Length: 182
Image (cartoon, rainbow, N blue to C red; front, side, top):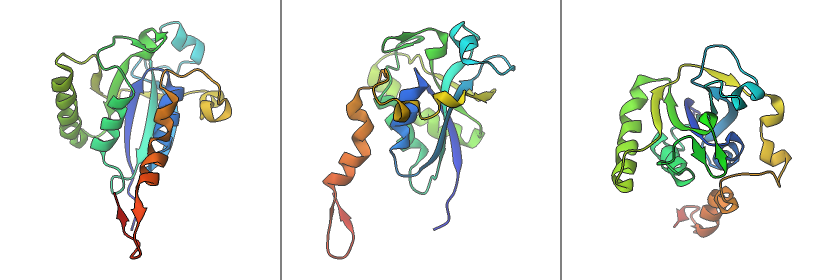
């Protein structure tokens, strides 16, 4: 099967945990943390901490034949508080806002369907931005895969969420024909 590549950008509070969370899933090909949807000049981390206007954001390249955009977004909503404004966990400030940023207009209907379902479930308007990506600047090298390099680092996402894929695989049983059964 040929690998296909799509990209989505998700802001969900501190990008360290977002990257570790999404890296676990089959079909996620590559991730990179960075700063998105702020002014058009590339910021440094200190600029972002001083309210440059950028959101800490995760770029996710994925194979839609393995994991759909809907599945990625459903998992995104598992680890954010979609009603919180500029805050996730103990992290607060404009850079910690939540957002779904897309580069392909054809992605928008699928994104909107998941967004509406989450909003209906929450019973309130979501604080999650739903916008086209204006810009994305990769973060400094020390931020990339930060929680892999610093396992005790702070994260607003509970640790149990970093093992969802391995637990899912452990609950599947392989029969003699090689087909997985739930």
